[in-house]
Length: 192
Image (cartoon, rainbow, N blue to C red):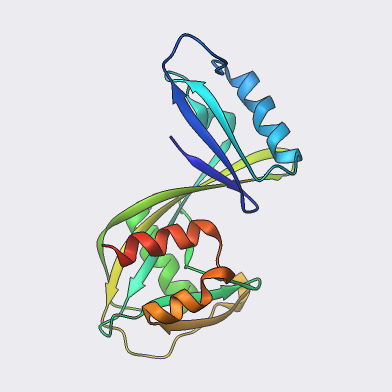
């Protein structure tokens, strides 16, 4: 079951097959619980939901694709967006596969070419409210390799101010300046 971030606070939806205890078994109650958490200052909450409940239906889901990109020197691509170290990612275009989306977003946001997907890493979830809708960004992350040795180009239109290659130790130096989900993706990439 997913761990959803709300501005760095975490909501853990856990599947419960037990007949005893409190568990949510309908979307209306789930939406209300999500709204309460979203409006609260709690840093972490777990919600037990029935195993057959389609929890994604409580949100407007926006699939995205992104990459943890490794070059031939073993360095990883990082971008700086809105003051945070991040990884390139973006929304899925109509008719595009998630893999195509991930490669396109890396290329658009950093200028990196010659990308090949090594394997899927993980899916992270981020939620926020926009125009009265509870949005769920379903981020599909891929480990990618590249032979690109050209200049990095930070995409200013996406509020990206910097793009760099970082060694594992340089990643660790920047760790506290990353969103938790980005830390999770990089940890998966480093252990792959």
